[in-house]
Amino acid sequence: MSTELNEGPWYLYLIECRDGSLYAGITNNLTARYQAHVEGRGARYTRSHPPARLIGARPYADRSTASRAEWEIKQLPKHKKIGYLQQSQ
Image (tube, rainbow, N blue to C red; front, side, top):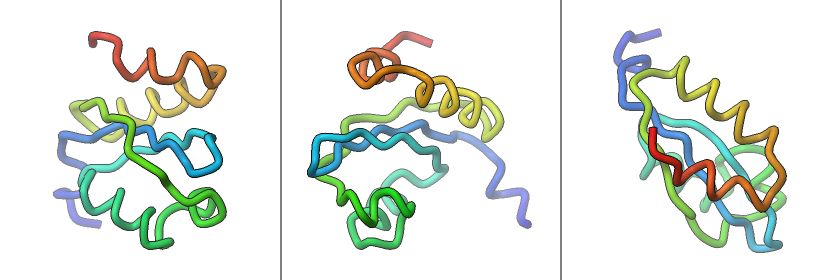
């Protein structure tokens, strides 16, 4: 695997799906990753719950930190996820 893939910034992003559910993920190419979700090539979840919009994203220095943040946001109830994304770092 190329070291380029592990260099920052990495982003934690939050998508609102058409059914109102939220999907959180990480990427180092936000535009391409969101487009993959829209085209049905993203995560299994967004293939069955198509995205309505990208709510937002938060940058992280590396993949490891972004992965920890993804785990944290996935532990939160739905009503707190957007607030987590908007917190100052």
